[in-house]
Image (tube, rainbow, N blue to C red; front, side, top):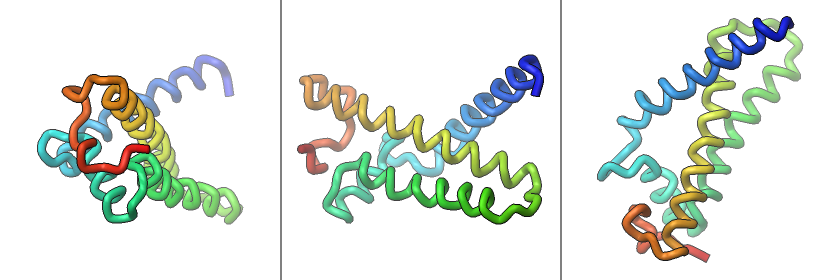
Length: 120
């Protein structure tokens, strides 16, 4: 792939990721907390939000591995969806870690709900 084509593809991927994070986030955010689902899952599983997220992210990675192992053509829309979801989970992972760091280091106003989550 030519560098120009790759750069264009990368721009398209990240635009798609941003759009998905904005649109899907509305349906997953409660009390204006973008990370609510991971905190709730963490409470249910008695773990940290980042651990709950990794469990959910692995599902997407396994799906990508299965596609790779199948050695059959998949439609591009399916590939785009899988890649977008996998990347977005890594963005959400970074958000969890930064929010947790802010809470631990005395900036509780930037962290929502960590008083109810096990923070080790």
